[in-house]
Image 1 (cartoon, rainbow, N blue to C red):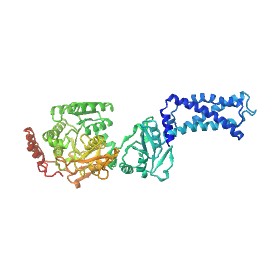
Image 2: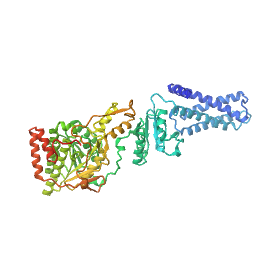
Image 3: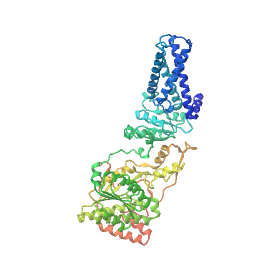
Image 4: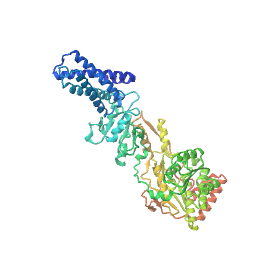
Length: 632
């Protein structure tokens, strides 16, 4: 083992020029030895007679072969990454060199006189090819599969032993600084076997293998197995203190692109247990294609994802309405490279009626997705008047402008925090829902045929201000990861899935609807933090691991936070739709006069900057006490 490591290090440190010189010199000696061995085999003696003619032929053999080897590229290849198919090039080069050598032997009339028996060329070809090819592949094994590693190499296991796994391993050998220790497969029939030159190990032995080989990373090549099985594999290996990454299926990759470039980190949404339902193209097409679409809050996390999805379905025009200049610039630049449909950026606040009216009327908007809102719970608790102004009266401004301009479909992006809210953010979202329902009633009374609806769902992974990016940042900084209450539960879904379901829900609207997106099972925040720490390749510091890993620090509930969230006021009233992930709440439209009167009272409190009165009105109208009597 020590000798192999020393030899490996010496070869790696040698300049490329001297490596080629060494290889050519080795081949010269090897070919001479092959010819000598051929005579030894022919005469069955260790030391055949050495005549001047035989010495000349021994020197002639490498003089013929080396130029052929150079011409056929045997000295251009990097031995560490030598492909298995190189054996055919070696055999071809050796066959040509042998034939030329035989021709010269005949021309010099050395054949048949005891100098070169007829069997010698066959022995020479076989031994030369074996020694030349064997030396190269032995060196490759020492360099690529030895027990030692270069200083910059990271030991890696690939989970899976399919053809895609082997191709990934081969791509990684020549790309980056990963060293493939072997493959992992749960099939007992594969354990101990070599697949594509890599040993297959039992995943049950991973803790020992990780310690033995110093493995720092496991790459999953399991795209063909079920989602449940994939989650099971991730759960088993996520607590072993190694980074877990994945690659897409080989059939999904564009030809010519390296698999190594497709490696990515495991996303936390892959552990949520959510079943995937492909979007219904008819629903999306009916609401988007050929229409003028406007998205408020277009630079935010939900708004920008809505825009990315909408442009793929060929709208006539997409209007981006955003108050943040840089966010608007960023999404407009991104979308311009994704589509040929016109992208119109509008810089303005939803609380400015003139700017909102201009955006809607100038381009004759057909469908409006209202995603603009202040959403950070503690921030709105500290700035209640701004939250009410933006979320309640901003929604009223946009909804009125849409109604007056004859916008066919208006969709409010709501939140599960609107159900029995205990904070300003949730209460303002509930008010926004009631405003939209009231607008739907107005549209029905006037027979305009307009559809106003709201889509309510939980947290989206990776959205601005959400807990997941915060946890990622804290883990990257080495911890601690802070949670307010580890027993707190929240619903989560990916931003992409949320955007798809929002658009499909809007196509199902008949007016006054509150759609509820099926969010699966709620996730315990403490478990979320632990899973993210483990997926990053760290361990959790706790009583059993007091001196290592990343600590989870409990900071206590913040003002207005609930221990759990709900999607329904009454689960029994949830009705199914034609989409399995979209439910419709069976609600009655609010009385028009009550909403108007409540808005007037709320507006008066905001105008006079009376936060206490504004909070009281905010919660009283939706049937809750102020201040909230509980944070649960």
